Length: 403
Image (cartoon, rainbow, N blue to C red; front, side, top):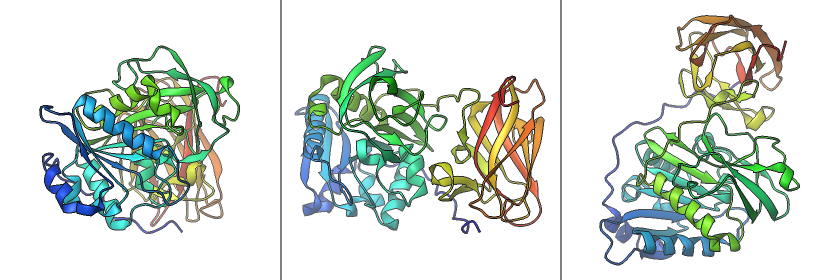
């Protein structure tokens, strides 16, 4: 069976941002490094750099902390560095404009601290993840949504060509089309495209050990409820933090996360024929991510009951001729209704989902789609009582593909 439903995400207004001084006093001796800010800077903003590790520890963490402190001194923001998870309380986080996870690893926050971070970001705060921030909190589904993707593996440190997709974001505006960079290059469990706005990708033909194919995002951003998230998988080596291009990437990413500079971080559109993780919905009713070891990325779109629906603002139906979904069910199954533009928009096709034998046993179902649909994809669901089925991923293919 799929696990029981969780309560809905908390809502609220934006945090007051000028409580940093009180917050720092409250933490007292818990802080590893006191605030560092530019002398005489007008209204500096405030950043919490968190580098606790419960797994592998990167020896570049002290260099990374020093880099953020140097950037703060140069550009007018205050840096407080800590490895004490007790910093994650609503009152303390309210004093910061952004929280940076600097090569954190493993399970670093307890449930109460997780709730505090989720409420902080969803209610208007900023999150920034660097490198092994993706190797963190594997048992917390919200964190995968926040960081964008979880770490899978990496080859040896080597040179690689980094390709920049967005030349307007403050983190990447200074780059040309390509950048040769030496680093430890992460493969991820899932391709985050469709859930995030991709800023940079890796050219896997330029190095060995890449496992994601032609689309290998490495730096991205996205809105998170009313907050902001930025992540880069680069930053393993000490030498990276001396690279002016990488330092500017960090600065621009932080300026976005902290709300100091605007940027278009709406999720990048998914090319036709590209598999979409079903749990990457941008709007929905009733549905939630569900953990399944046999699913790609370890999650599905789950808790699907009669009348529920999911919307995908980043997935256009325009030109799609077929819909294929990877599904599982230990219940009675049901029907997927493929719609255009709204939960009750024009129905383009339906796919019946059978009982597959277990929630961990997946098979594909396919339906042709009526031509002429426009707008974002919506999936609505019908069936009997209780949990109907889960969806791992789906593909919208144009005419000539998947026929």
